[in-house]
Each structure stands twice: as structure tokens, then as C-alpha cells.
Length: 201
Ligand code: MN3
Image (cartoon, rainbow, N blue to C red):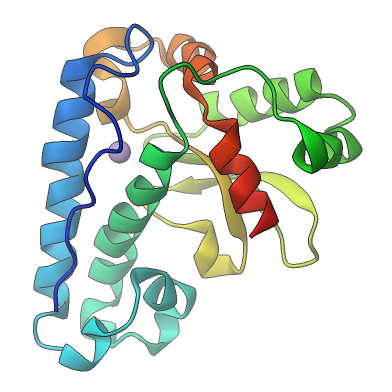
């Protein structure tokens, strides 16, 4: 068994004008495909690992043979993180979360506006390539964290609720060096229904 690139759950142009169709096409069809292919190549000689989910592999990287550990961390992380990321956006998204998630965000960050500002700042200040996340930590508290490269919060026991890819490949065609503008516009496509589902899971 090998891992397959999950289809985008919407058209390439669904997130226009905030995220352009060309970026989505290259990001999904080329970058995510490349992580998928390289993850499969790394696991080729390890059929016993192929029956595990990529999340299981990332949760216990120490159990992955040293020879392929970096490849699983990087390409398995890329495979997994992007699979989450597509679902966390949708056409006509944005706004604010509701219900228990909204309450939990207010409980941890005082207000949605304060959360949004803190998350945006974290994303804007990731040095180089990486991700910003809203996670549930081991003690069940909400937290904003960042990871370098394709590291995934699941590797440190955190559950991802919301993810933002701040690699240049995620925004450069439309925004060039204006990462903060990409971040500000990205809030317009956040799929809060999905984030709430992740919260309740
Ligand atoms: Mn990416």
C-alpha cells in the first residue's frame, strides 16, 4: 500500500481572490504530490510501516528506522500537514467560530480578536519556512504554536485544530514578500466548521 494524494475538496479557484488558483494548483498538484511521492519512496523498503497511518508514524518518530526518520519527518509531515490544511479552508469561509470552540478561544485568549492577532503575529514571525497552528495541548488547553519546515504538532503530542502554511510556495505568486497580507486575507477562507470538528474530535 502506498499513500495517495488526497484530492482538493474544492476547485483551484474556490479561494479566490484571497488565494489564487495558480498557487492552489501548484501547491496541491506539485508540492503536496512531491511530499506524497517522497514519503512513499522512503517507506518502500519498510512494508511493515506502510500499514500505519502517517499520523501514527509522526506521533512516534523514534520508532521509525533512523535511515528514513528525516524523510518521514519531512515528507510524511508535508503529506499530513497539507492534508489537514486543505480541509481547514473553504469558499465563503471566514467569520468567527461559534459554540464551544468560540467559548474555548475566549477562555484562553480573552477574545476572538486577541486570538486572531496573536495567531497572525505568530504566523508572520515564523523564520523561513514553516507553519502556525492552533492546537490542543496534552493538558487539553488551546495553544498557538509554530513549527519549522514540515514538522507537525502531532510529533510533540499536540492535536492540530487550525493550520496555516507560511512557506513561500503558499503565497509568493500573489503576495511576493508580503506575508502579513497573505495572512490577513487567509482569515477570509478559514473553514470554522472543520476547526470545530477538529476541536470536538
Ligand atoms: Mn505548503
